[in-house]
Length: 223
Figure 1 (tube, rainbow, N blue to C red):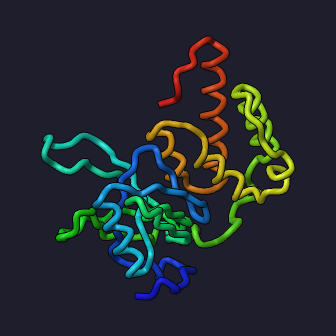
Figure 2: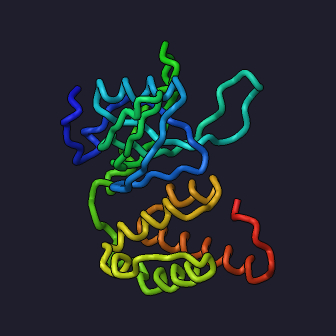
């Protein structure tokens, strides 16, 4: 397998991928996720991915462990990302960036001698993930911007509005979904949204709930 391979459909996806369980992390198709890798098993995972197709399956832990010695259970849906940037810091860490390819269903974990977990995946339910910009016209962009402005004001954030206003709708929705500080359940809901319109609507609803809580004097993060 070559790291130069291109991925344009689910048929191009590998059957088995390394799995990186990370609570609260959300990778979406064409999204960019920077990662600081320092645990030995995940350093091994990156080494293995670089030698193969450079793909890593981002997935959230889900559910309860059967016992304390059992591996943490995993969510059913994750997102495959390709390593598009890599740096060895020289102090035992890797700095990498994943570019999202498509979501997948975790069919089963695969027994292996590696320290990191591996899974057999099926991306057939997510063929639309390879269609850039699909569903942009259905998104209520003005409502999304209105909600973003309210959130930015509440957080007293500095934001480049010229970039926001010129960003493609898909990129804007997915970037906001990945960056917003929601809890693991909310992140998973955004990942599993059936289409871009649904993801934008969920994002707006979650943000409005958080802003309403703050208006009521309750400032705990949404979990």
